Amino acid sequence: MRVGNLSLALSLAVIVSCGGEAGSSDTPARAAARSAGLSEEQLEKGIGPVKDVELESLDPALAARGEEVFTLKCSACHKPDERYVGPALADVTTRRTPEFVMNMILNPAEMVEKHPEARKLLAEFMTPMPDQNLTEDDARAVLEYLRSLTASTDESMED
Image (cartoon, rainbow, N blue to C red; front, side):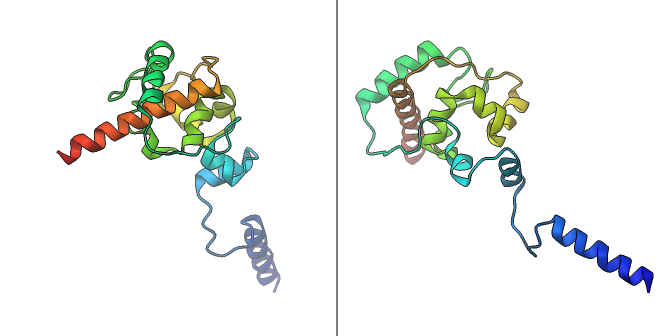
């Protein structure tokens, strides 16, 4: 009977250590975020000052300003359609939330330190993204430029 009690104790230990929920759908990213103390919102929107971005139709003037900022501050490491020092960014707005993009621009050190997706990027590209000291307005303009790249790609696929 001792073996039976030991088996029961081990089974209970496994259930308790796994959170006690059968069929839990905890992904590795969520587990990593939880271990870093991130909320679900931070996992989706990143870590930084930007909590909500309201997107409207594409603003060509803002996108043009964003292209200027991108060329000056970002193009040494990023190209729209090719891997370079950092990832290609033409489709980043389809893969990440607007808040995530802006928080990565504005708060790259903390993002790389704590966010599992930013940590994956560092592991893949082996170069941390430097803080370019952009303002939130600059980051919003860069976001609009990146949105324009996605819109251009979508339009060319329709032709």
